[in-house]
Amino acid sequence: MMSAALCNRIVRHPAALLTLSLLAVACAGDKDDRSDKGDGPADDSPVDSKPDEDKLGFDLLFSVTDLQTVTRLRLGPDAREADPDDRVIWTFHQAEIWGENAMKTHGLNLVDGTIYVGTLDYFTEGAAYTVDVKTGALGEALYDPKGVTFGGIPNPTNTRATHNLIPWGDELISSDTHNNRVLGVSRDWEQRWEISTETLTDPYMRRLFSNPNDVELVMRDGVEHLMVSARGDNFNHVMLFEPATPERAGDPPWSPVFRYPEQNNYALLHENHNPTALADGSGFYVSDSANNRFLFITWEGVVTRQIPAPDCAPPTGRAILDWPRDVVFTPEGTMIVADSRNDRLVEFDLRKDDCLSDEDVLWVHNELEETYNLVLLPHTDGWAE
Image (cartoon, rainbow, N blue to C red; front, top):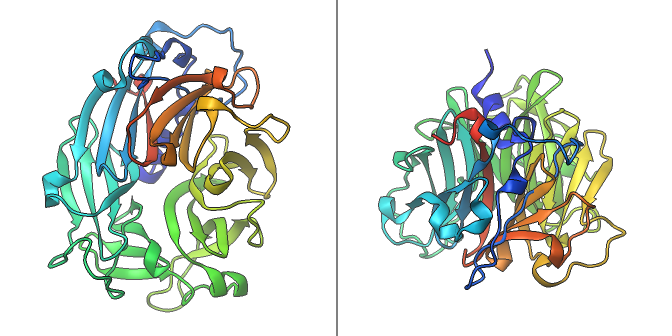
């Protein structure tokens, strides 16, 4: 039986499931300039192949940190002809749980119809909860800190372990950014193990491991691995951990087997976010946020693709990215970007090349204060219901 974690990866990387369709999903630079949308290539499918009518379109889940929301957006053959606000199926407002507070919505992971949401207050505490993918209704508060004034005085003893989280068997795995660790906890949030400078044995990682911002479970050679993104001041890396037998209580059941780059180098990777495993198992792609680009990297540490490509002219106009935090690709040759500091979603047509120009912009959804995480829901999986 396929594990829930693997099912999550398939939904999060639907390129292998979607057929050519998004070019029919559309864009309108409407009167208040709130539409313009795009996707990016995920394979080498011929651009002139015709999609089946029943396989057109997809929905998009996205989180917006400063608005403290998770939204499901309906996309399809006529999407570029509509105001993005008219395509919203539901929006979950975090205030429905805790009222107005200073927590920012960050990571989204979809498993079996449930969205696992991590939120964070940079000064005091974090929280975690689930949302139903079809209705947008609150599922459960996974981590609900008591007696905390959000936005209050910093407290280094608080957990703040909820930047991004995923279910793993009877546990949850969570990135605790400001305590510089990855946590394995029970469903009651009792700590069982951690990955940190205290438990790592690799001298380089033991000295510098810091600020993990994303955790994902991926399959490699038929074995479930843990992929971690961390972006400390001197530790900008994507890492892969294989299953391991802990030697002591509290040690992680994971051992590092890969990191990119080998040593911190801002020219190679800087302020990385949301790595995503490729469907063919060869590697991953990642948002290289401070360098305003996306990299495709093999598990041997070789960069095979860069967007925008190194030989491209600098992007201009609406194609200029500022701190992109996530990206999803479709087989039609388009990509959708969570363009965080431009407060928008933007779609690019990449069928011609991997350059980004104003003419490549297909669709934009503006007025989103710091977009963060994206999840694609292909209609072929029944998500259009």
